[in-house]
Image 1 (tube, protein in one colour):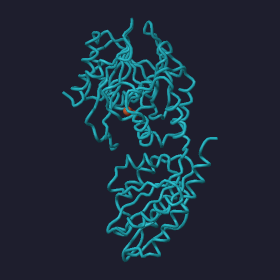
Image 2: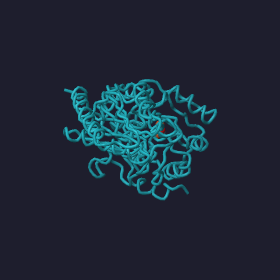
Image 3: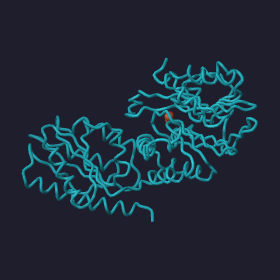
Image 4: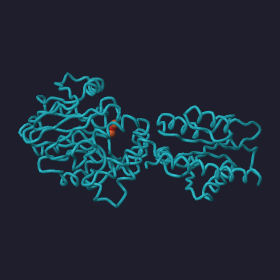
Length: 411
Ligand code: FEO
């Protein structure tokens, strides 16, 4: 039995409609989703369309395959499934598909052309495929299910499935959250919780794909939707503008007036510089967020960067370079490529040879950050004059943040 299966029945009873049944899995105790720190677990959402021609929308992670099949079997003989719709072939949503196909050998597997390639590459099955294209649809009887590819939001194969009759969008990873829950809808959770996790999800999964995501949200925004059922976390219903508007802001790179101060320190000197910079930022009425890169996971750091127009990155020098945690951060953020105009500044302490702060400045510039000023560096430990200079630099960075947030914000 998987970790999640014990809790499955809670959501089983939710069932979003009498003929659209949740047959997913809740992964309550996962804390590392391929490096993403999932402090609140996650879920793999999938739906059984009970109709004249029964259809499954999405699979689940392989370890939940037995649980998914059991949930289907409680409603219908799985062999009766005529369609297996795979919105996205990443294994957290397709791991159960081989088992489902074995149980439903007459079913057509519906995916985009790229999705079919993805499934063949992962599972090698000689399955009966039906390619989904923009606007193509299937009828299951009462339901029509219409497909819209959203390539690179977030894999080449990604698509969403829309039920125009019930005005439900099955949105795959888009609009999702890594959030395990015993309820089905965002409005059943404490206020802001689903949005907080949606932001974290966007920052770590979608930030580097802002343009395709923006196009996907435009396409979704044209549909008449009462309810969005993402493949992770809880669903959105009623007024969808808050989550769609948030996706718009995050995709464009709209920022708040704040400065993220990110650093690693050996004996406290770089830590003191970081605090002086943050104090300078705060004295200008701009929010500073101080994050030690060895004490905070990169998931949290990326979430902070999503709407920070300015980042200050510091490191002690270790073996003539910046510290490994700073290297990991630069690698991660290099892949995520924050959208919009961002500014960067480097600082750090060193002993008999420098190198760390200068290397950070160069790396930030290579990643497209506009470098505010040359780095502040200090030998061994900062004196009062250096700390005052760091404080003043914080004030300058606050001005940059104000200017960039004002420019980036929509009228
Ligand atoms: Fe949740 Fe891209 O898979």
